[in-house]
Amino acid sequence: MTSSGPLQTDAKVANPNDLPMRVAAVYDRVIGASLARAWENVLDWEHLPHLHSSSFSSLELEDAGSWGWRALTKGIPEETSPETRIELVVDRENSRYVSRTLEGGLPGMEIWTHFSKRADRETQIRVEFHIPHVDEEGAQKLGSLMTGLYEILWDEDERMMVERQAALDAKGTKEGTSTTIDLGTVEELTRSLPKTIQIDDDTVNIVNIDGTFHAYRAECPHMLAPLAGVPVDNDGCITCPWHGYRFDIRTGNVTNGKGLTLSPAFKVAVTEHQRAVISRA
Ligand code: FES
Ligand SMILES: [Fe+2]
Image 1 (tube, helix red, strand yellow):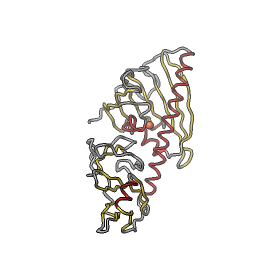
Image 2 (tube, protein in one colour):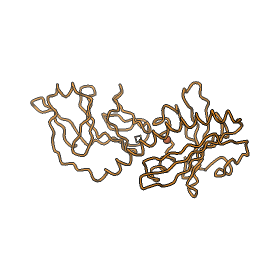
Image 3 (cartoon, rainbow, N blue to C red):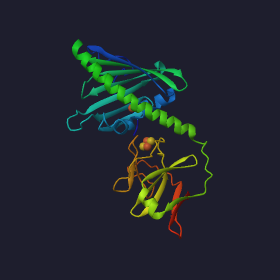
């Protein structure tokens, strides 16, 4: 996709369309993540319908770049939600960004989010909801609705950022010394699957697909989401909860066109005495 930038003229200015706007609510919170993680999250449009699947049912990207992104989105439930064109524009200089509704539900609404660093792993967030064409009462209602929604969205985002930071911190420090580990008899292992085990510093998922054991590192190769407990579907695939990349466990290949491979770091073998053993691949 060639990035051409925002459609909104004067996108970094508050209320460039000169609409009758009210600040319906202000939401303040501190998250346990660095500014780097917070900015990464802002430009990460892909996570909306997956990590935030209770708020967004779909997203179709129109344009993206270091300036921000624009997409057609739908809320929940999908059938009755209006298609809404959102444009998110970053104003790094002033440590803020605006998410503006261009079309669909509440057109002209601007949600301004300001970041400031509190500590290396702590960011102060202030969100202002600017809503056009509402009276005082309407603004109050919408304000408390938006604040409730943002509480959930930021809870989900914070969890992802904290987990991603922990995975980044652990990268390069992992030690892998174990050679071969006994998993019990084939029968015992089969009965206990699917399961997640720890091998040295690695978390490993073991599953049985059509009578064959498969083991893989329980970490998504995209942005390191933890994959422990993510169920295998009827086609032998798992879908990452952060951005929806779907991996075929038998090949490790991604099935929805993203060009990544699940780490084939481990393999399960069966000994001549019908015991299952796992070792590094
Ligand atoms: S971390 Fe992005 S799809 Fe898994
Ligand atoms: Fe998010």
